[in-house]
Length: 455
Image (cartoon, rainbow, N blue to C red; front, side):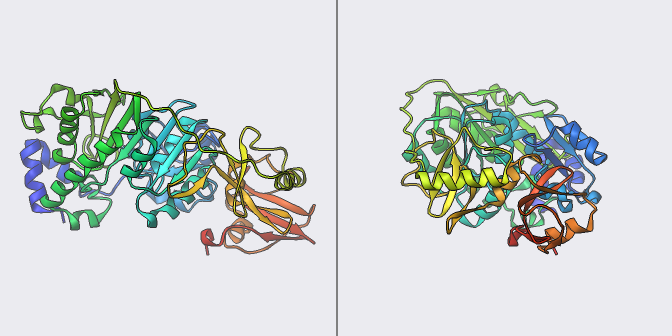
């Protein structure tokens, strides 16, 4: 049930239009998917699936899809061909719109929707996907792994600690701030249950502090995008208005999004009010496709730029490099990461960009692409490596159709009776890697991760 006091607040803000919003909040949520352009184009996915999908106006790779198709259960999801995401949430990374080579920081990254989106837009460069809540790191890691990019770093730190350690060195910073969740009322019943005006004010105070800390990470000329999934002006326009009053080195600029609603300057007290607040964007479930969202795009216009301090990258010893080359020679069609540096973290081998921000002193989960684990003079390839390859990236593959019973058995962790050349092979679905197998004496031993298996 929608909280009565929330309904009263919306009637005060929207007048007669409030009934359209309140009615929309009783309807089923909209399901969206965003295509992984590391792997295929939107047109290729449409041709492959023939699903009845419709475009999202503000995201060229985003689509609305009927929920009855259950795309999260399809093997194409396990292969990382798309990410299931609220269409409104796709507006956030599109607003930041990073360029190739940028350093980008996602400060509240889990479960990974906006980070995977940023990674696709960024291409080569560096994405720091930071998540403060340690219990959410697993989902973040799995989603970035499924996406297949090699230029992401996953960290687990408070925003203030990052600002102290790095300073204003990032081209783009995203703060998808924790909020009261009003925009998720029809998607997450717990948001309705936990809502109160006190929660709104508490969130606003926390958001103001986080936004000020995030600003310390943006270089002059760089962008800071602030977003929430709530309707409350206290958490949206009022947070931005207070920030601009305290930070004259920042300006509010248009989001550049198509088909969205403007911010609402009149919902801000007169002492902070500015027509510039209309440059922010609002997405309403009764006006746009998806749930409720707010997005503001800020540019830093002045300030000192500290020198970037890079993480020392120590290449692996020659013996470890030889093990990687042996695996490439025996199992792959070529080196998939020739432009990256091989580094070791314990027994795990990674490929990382040469110039990373300094990571020493920070809580780090993973940097770069995990290639595999070094075991007794050999390399055991990682699931992340499988999903970063193309269908032709391995010397041997076992191609299975989406409806092939053998694919269901593979995803459940079963071995497969398949004769052929022995050694490591990639299991593919419609030509896209979904995981590893190792063939020996006519049996394909299953290397699909136990935590992902579906029975």
